Each structure stands twice: as C-alpha cells, then as structure tokens.
Amino acid sequence: MLRYKIKNWKIAFGIFIAILYTSCSHEKKDSIQDRGIVVISEQGSFTVGGEVIQSSGTFEPVAHGFFNPTNQNTEGQTLHGDHATAFYQVPSQAKKLPLVFWHGYGQSMRTWQTTPDGREGFQSIFLRKKYSIYLVDQPRRGQSGRSTKPLTLNANTDDQLWFGIFRLGVNNEFYPDVQFSKEPEALNQFFRQITPDTGPLDIDLNIKTMSVLFDKIGPSILITHSHSGGQGWLTALRNENIKAIVSFEPGSNFVFPEDELPNSIPYLGGTLSARGVSMEIFKKLTKIPIVIYYGDYIPTERVFDNPGQEQWRAALEMAKKWTNVVNKYGGDVTLIHLPEKGIKGNTHFPMSDLNNKIIADLMNQWIETKNLN
Image 1 (cartoon, rainbow, N blue to C red):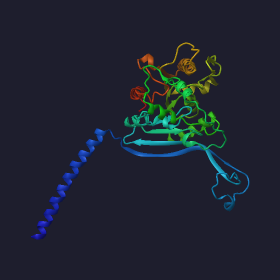
Image 2 (image 1 turned 180 degrees about the horizontal axis):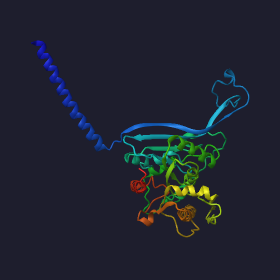
Image 3 (image 1 turned 180 degrees about the vertical axis):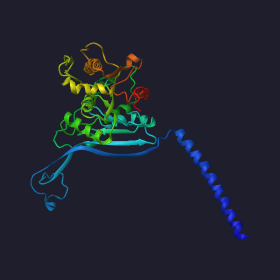
C-alpha cells in the first residue's frame, strides 16, 4: 500500500512538473517573440584566398624561436596574407539566397554592424528578415590586415576631410536635416570605425579573392558600398554565383563596352573615368538584376567650393550613363536617387543613418520584386 501511494505521488509530481514546464515554455516563447530575439542556427568566420610567401634560408628554432619585435631575421619563414575574412550568421528558416556585405574605402565589416549611435545596423535588420548574412573584410583591411607587401602607415589628422567626403556636412557643421545622429558620441564612434589599408590597394587582388568567396558559399546577393561598388561589377563579371547586386553609392570603376566608353567627368579635385571591357564580357552584367542607391546633398551642377559634394555629383552622373547602357543591352538596372523619392537627408552611409530601417525596407522590397528570396 505504501509503495502504491509513493508511485502515485511520483506520477502526480511528474504531471505537475510537465504542466509547469509547458507553462514556462509558452511564457518563455512569448517573451522571446516580444523581445524580437533572432534565433541563429549557425554562425562562424573563415578566410578565403590569400598568398603565402617565404624567405630564403633555413629557419633555426633556437636562434629565431623567441619573439622579439626588433628581430628582423626571417630566414626560412613564411607569411600568410592577402586573404579576405568573412563572418557569417544563418537564422532559423533562412531565405534562399544569402546577402554578402562588402565595405567601402577606409572601412571594414563594421560598416554593416551596430550604427554609430547604437541602433541596429543592416546585419541585425536583415537577420530579422530571415536572410543569412556574410560580412566581409577585403584583403589588407580590418581583420584581413596581414599583407604580403609592405606599406608605410601615416597618422594623418583627416577627420574633417572624411566628414565632408561622406557628406555629413562641411568642416564640423552638419548639413541641415541630415539623417545622421548629431550626438557627439555618435560622431566619435563613426570616426573610430575608419581603418587603413595595411598594404597597397590592389583591386585585382580584391576581385580575385571575393570571387573565391562566392565559389565557396554559392549563389548569393552582393551588397556593396562606395569603393566596393565598381569592384562588385568586376567580381560579377568573373563569378556567376552573384545573382544580384545592391550597390550603395558606387564611386568608381563603372564598366562599359570598350567601344562605348563615355567621356571622363571632371570634378573639383579630380576626374572620374570609366573602365572598358569587351562586349561579350560586358553583357554578363545584363544577366542579373542590379539596384543602385544614392543619398542626399549631391548637386546637379558643378560646385566650386565643396569637393566632398563634387565627387558624388560625378559618380551619380556616371551611374546614370552606366545604367542607360546596361539597360540598352537588355539589362535590369534600377537607379534610385533617394531625395527624388521623397527620402531626404541621407549621407554617404545610408546603412548607418537614422532612417536605415526605411532604406533596408526599400532594399528588401526590391529583392522581393525580383523574386530573389
């Protein structure tokens, strides 16, 4: 009798625990949904591409095996460098095509992460939209800093130069109604995400290495910014795993048929020229959908007192020429100048601006209209 009572007590206790667990599970699930937590099924990082160089001679463990910063004896030793680094996250129930984010000049994968004023960047925004994401540091930049070729790094005081080129404003004064946070700490964080090249800038190396990345991960959508825009077209000419391109403010290396090169566009402080390829190669760009976005504070006519704006006037003008030529040969390029769509105040970094969720939604809508997800 005693054994029977104990057995039933155990059953009752088990049922009680099961009910309690179920209740807590539902409560936990609801709270997770309320907090908007993203469930990541897989994440990690890896390198692709790169070179290995070796010094002549023989490595002697006793003579050379102790770390000494002043020891320049490299006999018989190797150096692994010139690779790209990718950090990836795969959400549960991920969409078909991953997004590959490639930074611009003087930047790293930091561009796509938390905004300078502490809000969610495109990394988190698009994870919430169920895209797998790959954040890349190109060779000789950021986490891919080890270069096989030397470069002298200078400590130049140039914050105000970048403030103007990135179209936040002039000198230390923000443009009126700019979509960038005017909190001092946000600007401090923004300046501190700028990072130098640790070796000579080599566009051909970047293209080759990024192509290796797409060989590894397969069909994907490439997201470029600024300097990586032109490199993005060139990588797409090389690798058919790039199924679409979203380009934020491309600034150089627009690819035209070699017998249809447009005239160079002069601007205050420089000249923007196009790059020519054969028609056979050029037509590869007509096989994938492409969208280009430019922000605000870009003049339509030459400005003689603002080199920061002038550079982007030339880029936007060249982008319009490029769009027309690609589409003339059957391509699918959409060029969006945000102010013309009523979206005003965006800087050269729309992924970091205060309205970055609006920009992300615009990009996502385009992806959906092209049946890419």
